Length: 63
Picture 1 (cartoon, rainbow, N blue to C red):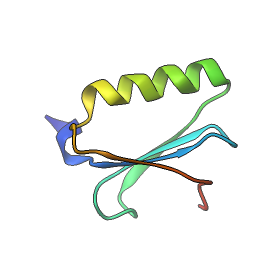
Picture 2: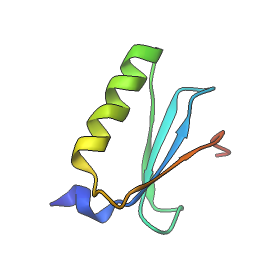
Picture 3: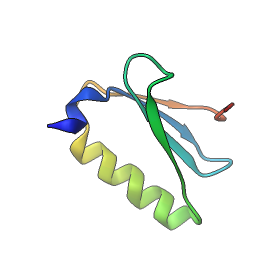
Picture 4: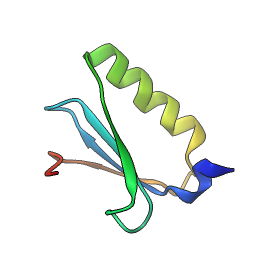
């Protein structure tokens, strides 16, 4: 399954950005969401498909 390759998530609540990474933080993809409700819904979805060992970091996305 593709989702198993990703094991880190950066959650930027200030700008409503969620970035899904592999261990190497330079590999992954970001989602910029238009509102808080969709942001929370997407984050909840990720928690169901990503491995249990996934690390979630809350910080402002710098890139």
